[in-house]
Structures are given as structure tokens and as C-alpha cells.
Length: 517
Image (tube, rainbow, N blue to C red; front, side, top):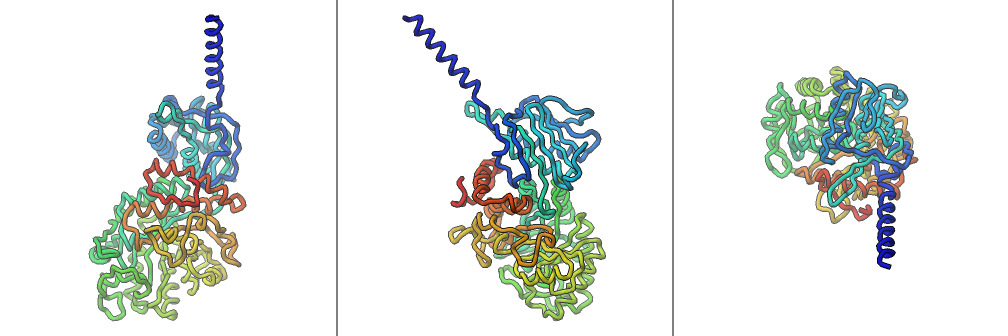
């Protein structure tokens, strides 16, 4: 009898071992991966590629740009896995256990930022028609690298097999950061750019001047920063970027395929400039520096030639530092400027911007002027202005304050932000379509979407994060994913899974009760 019991025990143990060994390893369904923005097509094959100590990244030989992207992926994967994945140049098609980033043989219809990701048990292959597409695909690889847990330790690391074909719906997907009301240093700005890259945001709009502070060095007008950059909202110490620091930010963003859009607001929102140079005022007197939050009280003197010399110098110096195609001239809330002065001013400033090879963006009020055909009106408040802009052949950048302003409070209880436009909970910020938001403004009129963040109440990086997350991923999806594929009831579950990324990146985020965290 004793032998029978021993035999039965052995059989049970063998059955348990077989049961455990036959248990499928997660992830096994790429279609269930919580990717944001949601890809255009995903097909799953039910297996997994395993990252281990032998995994290596390969890129096309002879391209420093691709090597940089490969190293970016290696650095991110190594930081999250503890592995030491290295980057090599591929002389031939790499074999088993490789991650291969290539521009060879890619479908040109993927466009500037599209990519094809194919995962088998043997290899992860990412192909694109352009380097920007590979970088976008890298973010998807980062999001689908699953971390199992063994004996309390992370790992092994697996990527579900299948194919993803993906490309953006809109070419412009942006965020604006106001560094004028409160100043943020270079490292904080770079951290914001890293967050944008993770969600395939490709435009970073810097609001560099306002009543409360001038934040970029202009060598021909040095008092703009020496005096005009010295304070901020509340009266604390301000700050500014030297031209070298600004160039460093621009390069950091460009390495992540993000274009910096500089904004110098005019003719209103200019008290810092007026206080720095009294000749820009019609009365020739310098007002005191301003540390409050009111708007609409300041104006450049639009009838003085010195004003246009000043603007020409500013646009020239900043344009020389900014390789992107856009220059933002502001133009909003110019209540202290008469309309009959505002219109010729905006017309003339457009010519100055064009002189330096840039394309004008301005807040929707610029539609009151005679817009150049390639100008862009950023629609934040007035649907009427949007209609006027497209009637002149201009394009629209959609940033409706009631939906896209991520400095608005989530609800009455959240401590940061304002609510003059609306309370914007996470679902409110997700549930809108740029192409149907304004009657008469269709997709063919729109270049994309942008989420502005004004900083009256925002003083540090933790505050920026709290207002960005979890709303920014929704804006990213609005810009990337076709509206027919977007649904809040599905999206909120994908968003909930991104809490692990927020926590891994040490992001201070708002735990919305409308998301099933």
C-alpha cells in the first residue's frame, strides 16, 4: 500500500509540473495590449518574443540617425528591465533574438511618421519609410514590453507576437507650455518633452513671453531678460533661457522628432517688454513689472516704427535658433489695442515672419486681419474667427478651451488650475472630434490638435505632471487615431493600464474616479 501511495504522489507531482509547464505565458494577445494612441491595425498570433541577456538591437548600417534611435530604445529598455541590450549596425538581416530597426523595403504609404511592427518568437522588426516613423514605433515597443514577475523580481520580459500597422490621422499633435507666468528650467522642460515623446506628440509650443515675464535672450535687446525676465506671477524670482539653453532644448526635442514652436505674444500680453523698453510704449514711459494674472491691459505701440524694428530683431534671432517651420505671434486678448490698429499690425508682422522663412501661427483673433494663405489660426475661443480664417485660405489648429486646455481644473475639488473655460474631467477631454467640433470646419481645414497649459497656478514640475496626466494621452489619441476607432468606454481601460508607466516614470498624476485604475 505504501508503494501505491508513493506512486500516486509521483503522478500528482508530475501532473502539476506538466500543468505549470503547459500554462501559456503572458502576454499572448497583442490585440489586447494597452497602446496609446491606439494603432490603426493590430493582428495577434498568440505567442511571445522574449527579451534576455542575449537580445541585441540592430539598425541599418551607415546611419548615425538610426543608431541614435536604436540607442534611445536600448537606454529605455535597459532602464526598465535591468538588461544590457546593445546596439549594432546590421550588415545583413539579423537573426534570432534581435530587434531590428530598418528603413529598407518599407511601404512608402506609411508616410512621414507611420511604421510597421512585426513581432515573431524569433525577432522584433520595426520598419518605416522615414526615421520619424521608426521613432514613433519605438514608443509602441516600449508600451508593449510586458514585465512578468518571478519570485518578486521583474522579468522575464516579453513582447506579444503579431503585426501593427500604424500612422497618424493629423500631422500636428502638440502641447503648449506657458513658461512666462511661471518659469521652468531647462531640465524640467526636457522632462516634459520626454513625456510627449512617449505618446507620439510631435510639436512643443513654448509660450516665451507675456505680461509677467520675457523668457528668451534677445542679444540685440538685452534688457528684455535682464529686467523683463526677473520676476513671475506672485512676485517670485523669474528666469530666462540663454540662446544656448534654448538651442539645447530645441535639439533635445528634435532628437525625439518633436518640433519646437516658439511664441512671442503681441501686440497684447507685452507688459514685460514694455517695462524693459519704454520706447515701445506710445507714451514713452515704462510701466512697472507685473506679477498678477489679469489679461488684456497691455499693448505695443503699433504706430511707432521702433516697434517693428523690435519685432524684426526678435523674430530674426529666434528664427535663426529654431529650424522648425512655425513662428507663433500670439495675437490674443489684445483688448488695449484698437481694432483699426490691430489689423494692420498683424498684417505687417506676418510679413516679418515670412521674411525669415517661417509660417505664422496665431491665436484665432488673427483671423480679423488679412491672413496669408499658409497661415494657421489656433482656435481656442471663437468659432466665428475659425470660419473667417478658412475663408481666407488659412488652416486651423484645434485647441478649444472647453476641451483641450489642460490647465483647467478636473473638477471643483482639484487644487490646481482655473475653470473659466470649463471643468475638464478626463472623459470630457477625450470625447470630442476636431473635424466636427465647429460646423463648417472640416478635417481638410485642420492641421491638428494642441493642448495648451497656462501656468497661473502651476509652479513646479509636479504641478505640470498633475495637469498633463492623465489628460495628455487622450489628446495624443485624438490627434493620432481616426475618430471611428475611438471610444471612451474602451479607452478608459487602456488608460488605466498606463498607471504603471506613470508610476515607473515617477509622474504625479490625477487618479480620476472615471478611470478604472
